[in-house]
Image (cartoon, rainbow, N blue to C red; front, side):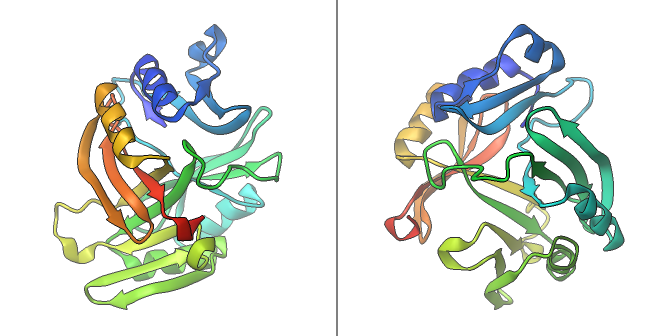
Length: 244
């Protein structure tokens, strides 16, 4: 996550999700604070230079088997490379690319190829969703560049949606927002699992966050959209039993 206030973000997410941060003087000086749930790396905070003009925002990283090959394929299929693969000590190798629509996303090849997260556990990323106004071109990009096997959920003019994988095994979604008007913004959305959506919303507000969309029930669980204490948007889901 890119944040202009590391201290505020540490306080917010440690209390909301139970994360523990590597928050020593050296990490602060470097501007990167890894976040752990127990001893498992789940995320990280990166200092956002207030003069850069960039908004505080959650960045989606896609796990790949070979980050060098994935970055090359992205450029070959109409994307761009914004950060060539760089090694993060003891964690893995990452790169930053954008798709043909210009939407940025990270690529990550972990040194430890084991289980990277505990699915649906409170405080873990449960879902990533790409909102796009160029659905066909972007879906083709992820199929051809990253080898995604996309499953169609709906292909009606009112609702076009596909997922990486199927059903309860799906890992991410692509959503067509072309017909939603100029107020709809393309980009990746980040969702975190919580044990109690309503309690998490109340706690987020207490910690200085704000509610963008009140908790509501869906097929996937009880969901809400929030701002954290620095204005970065994210979503939470209290998963339904059939997603367990």
